[in-house]
Amino acid sequence: MLVLPGTDPRHPTALAEEVARTLPGGRLATVPIGGELLTADDLARAVAPAVRAFPADDRT
Image (cartoon, rainbow, N blue to C red):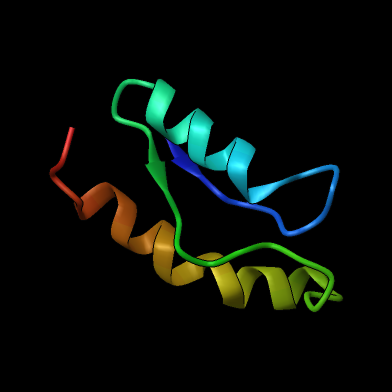
């Protein structure tokens, strides 16, 4: 599972890190999801590289 970290109190990065460590095959994306992403297009551009790379990443 690819875990996208947040940057706000409701979606803290520390929780995302813990989730990624806990899940079998869990991976933490390196792009934080925060208030600077104002539209769905902003979000898509920010996370697309991590999402594209995730299935190709052979670490399990």
